[in-house]
Length: 70
Image 1 (tube, rainbow, N blue to C red):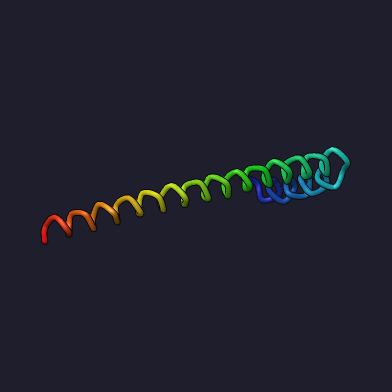
Image 2 (spheres, helix red, strand yellow):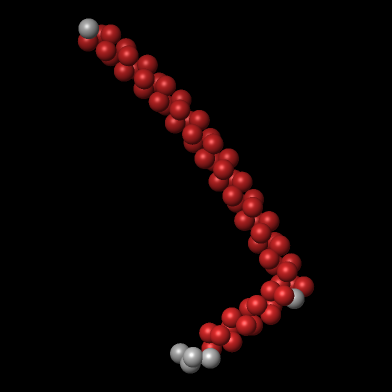
């Protein structure tokens, strides 16, 4: 690949991002990324709650088994 192609593409990308459509694209990507991160945070919170409930059930089962074994 020619040595001038990548720098030219980088400059073209920067120039595009400085235009109004480029700024609009940046804003849209930023909004979508923020929504995606919020979704990941909500999913992680739900997973944490579910795992906490599973752990509580397993703790009760363990205590019951220990009592039966005694």
